[in-house]
Length: 166
Image 1 (cartoon, one colour):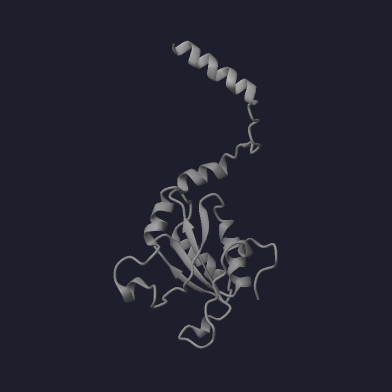
Image 2: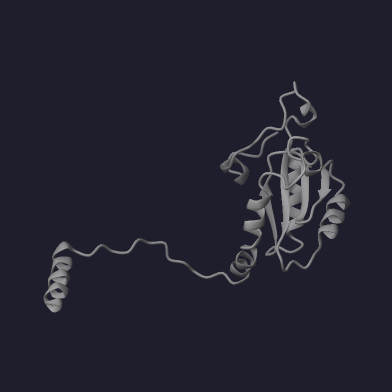
């Protein structure tokens, strides 16, 4: 039950949650997303979690300090993340997460200390104000390559600069 061929999820790594033989076998076919609130978001983590529960989708939702973790089958998770972003589109961000909420291999409560990836998330969080501003104030960016300077023109400039320094 993977997303369709040209879906953004297929442009990135899809991490299957279980192969049916390990402790996490109940995660087979499921995906995880982190809902990250920007610093100036008009909604709180609790409001996000409440909203996700009100969707009544079969999801595992966990409140976090930065927003929420959402776990479930791709169709449900992608629907939930699409709808939750509509609450504050320029301040709510969705990020991939490789492990389901509470997974003992990554859960801070079971391992102690910050989990792997938390410091990366913390660094990304510092950039979210700039990202939000760019979303709210889009500007045209020209991506065409600059034209090359002809060799004769370049040689002439080098001789002019070299001649002026003598």
